[in-house]
Figure (cartoon, helix red, strand yellow):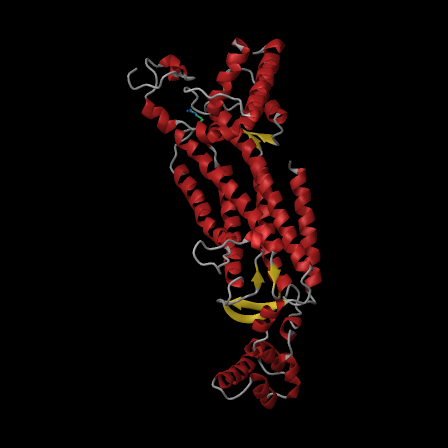
Length: 468
Ligand code: ARG
């Protein structure tokens, strides 16, 4: 075995092979460096499987006990960092089984009866993803709470609302912050929906077709806390929809964070000056002493590219795979782990940045009180006196053109052409006050929105608690 891996002849599948695996094969196909983080799920899944083998009479009660004790010992080794990997350990499943067999002997060697790594890895990854996506949802609820808290403590603060990044109409800051909060509400909702679909045990599907051994996948699913069990063994081992769906949700969360990121890059610039980021959540420049940079906001924007890449990469991997298990499926884990990690880091950093920042109401008001921002209110004023909106729009448009041509302040031109009562539309903050329609950006509809948001948060918390 000149080019073989020393000590690696003890692979799980060595019986059929003459020599040991080539070094290049192991180096290329090994998944242990990244799938070892599934150890807890793997041990939990094995415990459920072993209890099932006991119920099926494949392992006697003493054997069940000794394997369960060995699995506990392996779990302890993983959690205190004393677990020692060996060269033949291709992946976490191999490593755990090898160690259990070292500890429990022949009883350990029975553990893999009526199971394949194909249904095992699908089970592990579902267990892991259920926990991880629940954690993401809880993180998001924390971020929503920060947005709500800031929205409730900036009474009366208004800023320009934008379309095409051109100033459009004034909006309350609370309204703007909650707009992002609603996007995260939908993300949480998507996670809870996805959790329901992924809460299906594939254990018992075997390599692809089930087994001749009298196991009971329904009982094992219940034992492991899954809500339901697979109906088709081929589908059970090849389905990675739950990973794709999670990656989509994580990518969309990334897109939502990126929108906040972009705004905060702008808002914290000298040009806007709407917000001062706390020193703890900003970075400096190695060369330019005066710089204070919004790196969290920039990376919230930047990391979305990678999250989208993780999704499209997995979809490309899944496309065209024949049933059932193919080793290609091993490529599901790294993007999933990466997207979960990156989103959790981003939510925490963006939450901290928002929670600690200082808004600058004067700068926001100065921008929002620009005269031309009153244009739509002037047109609506004319509408109230009976003029068709299209005509009112043209009247006000002409006034704005004359104002921009230097003929005078818009307020003076409006008073002269429309009447003295329009002067009050120009008073500071009037624009935000006047957004009165339900769901609108002013103080009159705001309390109802806040009440709905608080109700939605409570419902999300309940749904999440209920599905754990
Ligand atoms: N490391 C593998 C994966 O992640 C485990 C399943 C291996 N199955 C197999 N038939 N080689 O997919």
